[in-house]
Amino acid sequence: MELAGLGSWVVIGNPQAIQELFSQDSKFDIGRGNALAEPLLGSNSLMLMDGERHRRERKLLMPPFHGERLQTYAQQIGLITEQVASQWQMGQPFVTRTAMQKISLEVILQIVFGLSEGERYQQLKPLLTDWIDMTDSPLRSSMLFFRFLQQDWGKWTPWGRMKRRQRQIHDLLQAEIESRRTRGNKESVDVLSLMMAARDENGQAMADEELRDELLTILFAGHETTATTLAWAFYQIHQHLDVHEKLLKQLDSLGKNSSPMEIAKLPYLTAVCQETLRMYPVLPGIFPRITKSPVKIAGYFFEAETTLMPSIYLVHYREDLYPNAQQFKPERFLERQYSPSEYFPFGGGSRRCLGYALAQLEMKLVLATILSKYQLALAEAQPVKLQRRGFTLAPAGGVRMVMTGKRAKSAIEQGEKTKDISQVA
Ligand code: HEM
Image 1 (cartoon, rainbow, N blue to C red):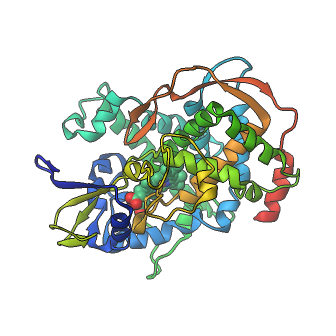
Image 2 (image 1 turned 90 degrees about the horizontal axis):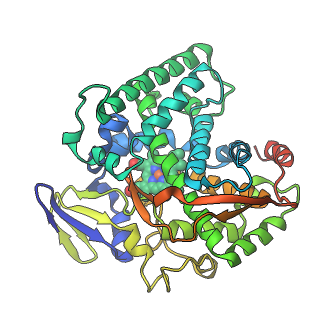
Image 3 (image 1 turned 30 degrees about the vertical axis):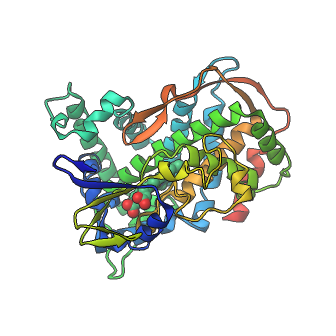
């Protein structure tokens, strides 16, 4: 399709073409296509980089989000979940997405920023919440998409307010980086400490502006997405009694000494998360790929400066891959293996989501912790619809639920978990 002033756009829903595209990522500019996010994240954001700069930055950022490092964060995720869920009152409805957002914000503050108490934490938390919430309605989201709405006419205009918040956040993050540098942070295992200690091939560390913009990028990319997916998971699990029962059976079968990593490996829990991510990809498409020179994909030639848009939605709803695609059916992931171009909620190629492993671990531990301790029910009978929220798609109304009881048998005990984690880490 031709979009006025924006050149040619091609939406792709064919797995073969998407596979070819993922394997030729170096032929595209991708960061350039994310320019809309620049006023929000700053020019040193991984999402906006291309070429060698992107490759270097990803290499520096990857290690804290993978392998054994990730396991050390599991206990914190469980504890944060317990804290948030313990505030629910019997019989009083709550908005699941808001509760999940509290969890995912706290996870990022503690695990990534390394902050869980103290004056700077107290100052940053409300500022970051406010900064994120500025896109909490379709109307407010529109300022992200239209440059003419991005005018700073003082603190009473939405953009002016956003810019003020951003400056305050920048100052606090800068202060945190400097104070760590002076006091040294050899003991810390949070992501910021690891980012500060990382060096590239030339022995070069990340600059302060890079650290600051990447912290905001991780918060921006990682917290809405995980919270929204979890809200959809709770919605579907409580609409399908059979799914709920199977999950509980699997969770109850865990011994008291099971570790978070054992929970993360449970096949049905994994399938429930996979099916939720299939039906509700928070980003309907992956980042646009802009051709740098003419490219041939799946037998088609594309001119330079064509924007290719692989659509997660189109592929995840293909009846040839997912029969009865409108149905929530976790079993399909137990019965069949999907290739990286048939199933890609986290994108692919050189841009695959930096936090995909953390997001999946968080989803599983939050679901397992809550479902094994609490009985919940949907507070409203009518189907929940999709609504735009910033760059993502979220459940309209956030999925209202209510606590109806506590479970006598709880598969996961926090005390036991603490012991297990020390063994895993
Ligand atoms: C359910 C949760 C999440 C979903 C569905 C999701 C999805 C995605 C998708 C589709 C992309 C684009 C990939 C592409 O174009 O090929 C992406 C990129 C990214 N995600 Fe996630 N994400 C999630 C959670 C997270 C978390 C927890 C973090 C951070 C801890 C994170 C950080 C990022 C970053 C930094 C990028 C940009 C990567 C790059 O440009 O190289 N995401 N994510």
